[in-house]
Length: 137
Image (cartoon, rainbow, N blue to C red; front, side, top):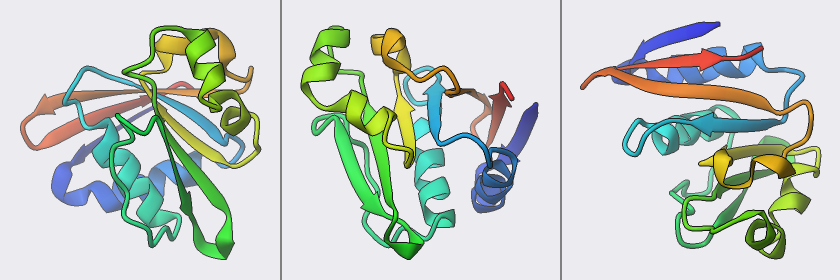
């Protein structure tokens, strides 16, 4: 399934995305550098009621936020990791299998660690103002 959205409508796209993924809690975001993965995850976190500042976990690897109802939400960026062993050492696996929302950027860095029911989403810029999400439901 594809969702095309203008960046000015990202909040609506994030809400629609959440309505489609009701069964999945671990979501792997694929896309080139600058495609908009972090920006979209920020909008999804806002739709979940996260009040914390949502930012890229490029250096921290894992950011934890609190959604409405005090539910933890994990935002993981594997870009700086060398391999799956390093991901395990940083605690990524605990987040992936926590049952909480877990949004992961650069999942190919530790592809073997993901739960079987992980939802894979490709995000691609169509132009400067439009993005295309391809959701493998």
